[in-house]
Each structure stands twice: as C-alpha cells, then as structure tokens.
Length: 143
Image (cartoon, rainbow, N blue to C red; front, top):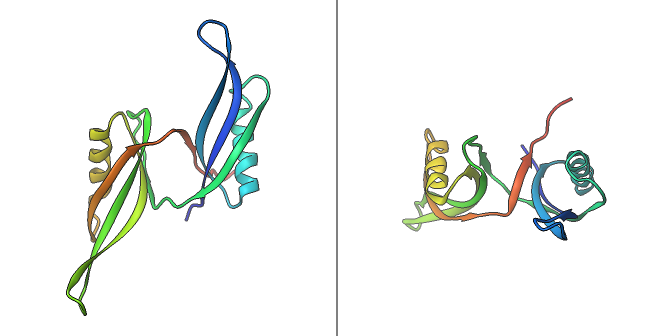
C-alpha cells in the first residue's frame, strides 16, 4: 500500500526573453511521512534545478490507484464510484475513490481508466475526470 504526498516546489528560472520568472510545480511522492516526502522531492529535484528552490507544500493525498501510460504527458484525477447494493434498503450505494491516470487528453484518460479497470469484479462508474497540475510521480523504489 502506498502513501502519497503531493509536494509543491517553487523556484526561479530564466524565461523566454531572458527574464527571471517564478515557477511552481506539483509532484506526487510515495513516502511514509511528510518529512520523508519533503526529503525525497528535494533529492529528486536537485539535478534539474540550478539555484535555490523550496518545497512550499507537502500534503497527504488519498489515491486508490494510478494508471501509467508512457504516451501520456499529463496527469488526470478521476473520481470513480464503486456501486454496491444495500440489500436491506434495496438501494444502490456509491463509494467514491480517487485515481490518477497518465494521458494526453481527457478522452485518452477515460480510455486509460476503462482499460485499467478491466477485470474488476465490482460494478463501477467514472464520476469526474479533470487535469491536474502534477508534473511527475515518484514511486518508492527499494534500494
């Protein structure tokens, strides 16, 4: 089971016309604690950012599943409802979970979720799909 943290990294970079612009980027990190997530994103960012940067936010996120797709360049957040039947009341009950899918557009994100959910024994429906600001995901790798 993964514990995910959304981290926000702020730094200054040189823009198109040579001006210094402030940049803020979001990353998802697999870690056990807030401190570990902060340390991990600092280590991941060091090779890519010249100069100073700061981790301005570390927040735990409940992510049930992540579907990777090498052809995708964006991350989409989907709320997926699992549908169960309350036999006592005779009504359907929906339990929402958050999933992330890597895709190039909303249509391919929906297709990615459908593909990823193939073989699921439960009934489910996609409630919402929206693009996120997440640039990349750093999954835990055993050393």
